[in-house]
Amino acid sequence: MAAIFQGIGAAAALPSTEKFHSQSRRFVSARKGSLFVVRSDGRPSLGSSPRSRGAQHLITNAVAAKADASATSTASKPGHELLLFEALREGLEEEMDRDPRVCVMGEDVGHYGGSYKVTKGLATKYGDLRVLDTPIAENSFTGMGIGAAMTGLRPIIEGMNMGFLLLAFNQISNNCGMLHYTSGGQFKIPVVIRGPGGVGRQLGAEHSQRLESYFQSIPGIQMVACSTPYNAKGLMKAAIRSENPVILFEHVLLYNLKERIPDEEYVLSLEEAEMVRPGEHVTILTYSRMRYHVMQAAKTLVNKGYDPEVIDIRSLKPFDLYTIGNSVKKTHRVLIVEECMRTGGIGASLTAAITENFIDYLDAPIVCLSSQDVPTPYAGTLEEWTVVQPAQIVTAVEQLCQ
Image 1: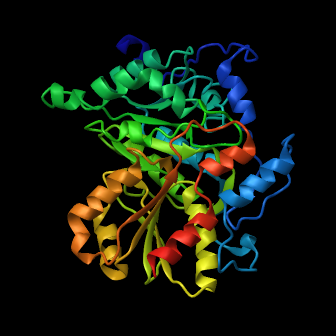
Image 2: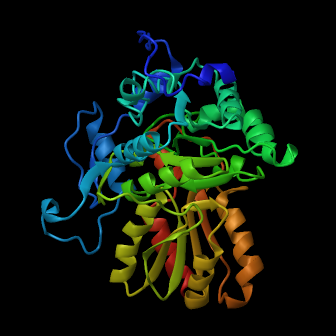
């Protein structure tokens, strides 16, 4: 295995091969997950989706407009506009330019460019050894990536869908998370595991998994979730540079979210939350797609006289208890909004952490809004019912602040 990767960075590239995708279960889900552009101010652009009418309805729920949206043309602002999947690619490409040890592996990450085009064009630029197409065998190529990390490389392992990585759970748990400890510190595992997840747009139960709750119990692994193009790029670069294994969760409905990001290089911390909206009355903790449901609800709450403080926790493991604690000490009330399942989810762990550390500052019990403990239905109307919606957030805050 190590011999395979010794050629990484060489000038010669393997000859490209044509792939037949129509029978692939991955390709079907990738096509069903196609999205159209949604700007960070919440305005959808015209797209070519065959089901654009239904998609536009759901996107409105997914991405909220900014409360203080400026009419100033974005062309006059510094930086450059990118979609979230393009920001991920830009961060990945910058790190591949900076460090020849960085490589990518996964199903269709090469000449096809990845199921959501995060790796588009990288195989042509860096060759087939640094951008390695793998068979449909998650357990095998995840183990191969971990082994490559043990030899000194810095692999990024892409799961075409995070649900497929359940097939590699043994490798992620027993090897990726524990080898640094079980080897007595002889090996480091600087690997990034990333891919799309969350409830998409009628992708069915198997392709709508939220695996944060599965992976949070594995010792030795860090977990982060991106929610904007800005933090997607910054977290990607930080994850690649980390000496620890990092799982980067990306949401299928946020890939085409557009935002202007700085031209200069930046790297975010893997252990810091983001203050999205300062407030006084209640702390709302959320992450990933639910950030936009919360901000949509926040507009209604402000009109009703409430002043919510919104924090995107970003770091799912470990939690940024410094930022969270300071907010709790100020507002004395906490609402957690997540897309993860209620039983054993991130919200449950966050509730326990806040209770253990800040219970004396709470004036009311912590409220947690989570997805229902049911398989995600295929029908669009039923799918919406299983996920927390902005109206539920408004009601919860009103009850919490009584």
